[in-house]
Structure formats: structure tokens, C-alpha cells
Image 1 (cartoon, one colour):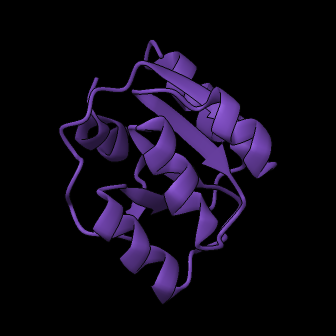
Image 2: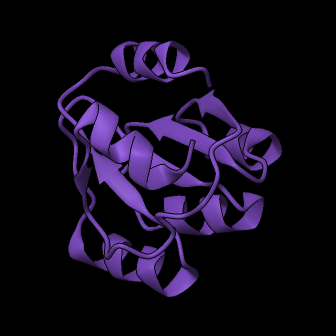
Length: 110
């Protein structure tokens, strides 16, 4: 499954451009502590968080994440979105909880 298919299936709202939509999704990490995310987000990982600050773009880029999903209705500010676009990271937001997003990923075979 790629990011575009995932976004359509879960009805995610893009907070960045449509770059990175062809990235393959291979796994998931859920967490808000940036230092742990730096160690656990790997290539192809969907990172689910409630963090919205500019550092999420750097952490996701460092780990080559497939995308970032910000749960619980939180949204990144404009600077975070711009930084993510510059780093080639796709960020989505959703009203769903992290659990609901993870459940949707599991139901999709991730």
C-alpha cells in the first residue's frame, strides 16, 4: 500500500502538498517523544503522533518515514508544513485518535 491509498482509505487531510504519495507503507510507529521517534521511525513507517511542531519534519526526514499522521484533530502550523514539504515529508491530520488510525492501518494489512 502506498501513502495515496492509505490517505484515501482513512480519509486523511493533507497538511502538505501531494509529494510523497507514492511512498510505500511498510509499518507504523505511534509516539510523541521525539527522541524515541528518532530511534524507531524507519523507511516506510507511518508515524502517528499528536506533535505539531517543526521538529516532526526533521525527525520524519531523518528516519525516511512514509508519512506523518497527526491524530486527535491537531494540525501543524504553516512553518511545520513548509519545512515538511522542503524535506519531502507528507503530513496528514485527522480527527481520529491514534488508536483509530492504527486500527485502520491494521485492517489494511499494515
